[in-house]
Amino acid sequence: MENKSVIMAILLVLSPILFTMAIYPDSFSLSWNQGRGGFLFAAAFIAAELIGLKFVIPKKRFFYCLPLIALTMTYFVSLQFGLRDYIMSLVDVFGVLEYSWEWLFDFTVMAIFVTASLAILFGRKWIRIGPAGPIFLAGNAIILALDSFFPYDTLGPLQYIVPYFVQANVWVITALDLGVATARDNLMFLNGDFGPFALQVFWPSAGVHSIIIYSLVMMAFLIKMRIPRNRKIIYFILGILGTIFVNLIRIFSLSVYALKVTTDPEAWEEFHSVAGEIMFLPWLFIFLLIVTVVETKRLKRIESEKTSKNNL
Image (cartoon, rainbow, N blue to C red; front, side, top):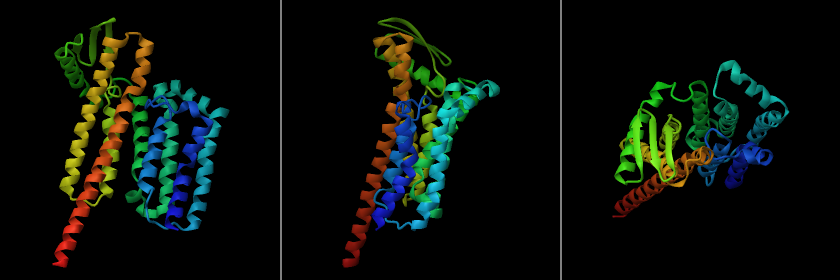
């Protein structure tokens, strides 16, 4: 009974994502600001947190979710009938970056739906039961909003660490003798097998958005885990360091692509559009999995030791 209840909840929460995949299959690009690929990872978070959960959901709560599902699906259908054109007409009105603006509303709507549906199904306990999916979607919406209203390097605080990433990348390229690399602020000048290539790095390309999203998801993940505070802090810091390392690899891979593969701007941009998410999202899943496995084994060991003492 409990498993059927939770499985039904998962299907209800994921139904707008599955519906969107069915009507817009080509829009599920892995790039963070060029498609709905983030929906897939949010779905994975939702499923991972709810599968195996022992929770009986009253039937009436499922019916309460149906109007939300209908409204959400109506939004995505309406995009084909003028709503998308209206949204994009506001680009010039607000002077925003069109690439991120185009997907901002999709992630906002999906974040609202997932949060509301989980709250209806699980009540106040939803924040401890399944926070990662909603927070991941909301985090993406926040990043898209920031990139829309403060594109490129206009948001100073997020751009601050980028020159340090660029300098570190230049040092690695020089140390490995992969080509000629120099840097000035967020500009990187490369010269490799296919000639010169200038690369201007802004905070999204440097992966600063992934650090923000990681922080939000990890905080939600750690809040629900019953482990000592010191261990939570250690895991959080290790995750931040790991995310920074992944971002350095991201910039390095983009540089090597220009140095050793091609300097064709179009081909390089295609690689750039997916390079970050291909590295960051698997890292996030792997790190969360490692933390879960380590803490599960630790709790089992503690329980086993307690049982042994009680039997003495």
